[in-house]
Image 1 (cartoon, rainbow, N blue to C red):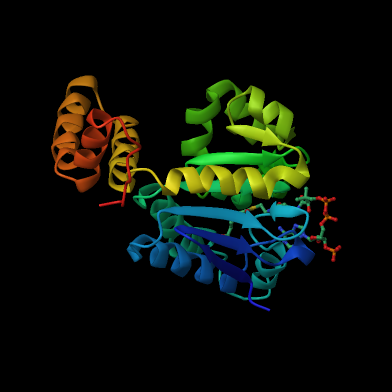
Image 2 (tube, rainbow, N blue to C red):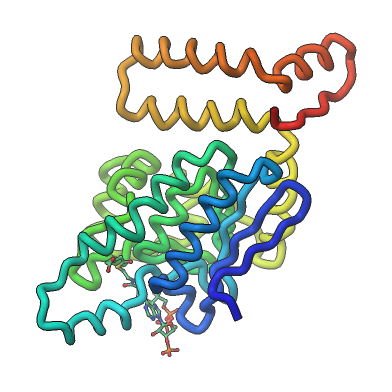
Length: 262
Ligand code: T3D
């Protein structure tokens, strides 16, 4: 059985981490498959929304710790940074820059780099039984895979420091309250609610959503004047899409727009 399940339904592609026996711990094979799958979805114009979820009772428990321990056998000094640069960092950048919406359907615990993966998605829907753990500190490590970047931006520095320094489990209800997730639904409704949202997003002007993502990413490290100018530049691009014309025409003709993503 493949460690990553890929399923297409209309314009929505679902990537499902499939190592349920370890709560979808991320080993090299799974990380490589996930990196390739996100890159493929990026290039494939028929995909207009991506869902990331986990099989079984976990979303992802983060880096496979058995693989980490196996590295202790080597006489070479342990170089976790090299592993991050090779496997995780390109994946996180790809999730943040792929110009289509990415939904994390957080079906269970998201710990360590598994939590970082969820944070790198654009929207997070959580099952009531899901939880978020910045587990790195529990194994003497620093939050990685973008957690130190995304977490304070989503929930503020004080809360991010508390989660990162204590490794405390944050429930789905608390995650909703502090702005870590967009929506919490009963466990048996997560797949349906995610599909409904994904179908909606996949029917919207994909180019405009991609450019919006670019703008919001840029705003994190920008100033107002630079950002205003960047918005103007992106708007020129959006204004030249077929979907822009279709949106305006449909409005004036008092009908629903039929967006194609072009
Ligand atoms: O090399 C690098 O690139 C460094 C990068 C590091 C990035 C990181 O992600 S560091 C953080 C790694 N993750 C963790 O520290 C989390 C470890 N897991 C846990 O703390 C707990 O499993 C959970 C809180 C996530 C869930 O607890 P619980 O009680 O619901 O489940 P469990 O019984 O602990 O786990 C179920 C099984 O999954 C169990 O296996 P078993 O006993 O049934 O055979 C457990 O060993 C396995 N498992 C859980 N997490 C991992 C794992 N196996 C390997 N790696 C894991 N991360």
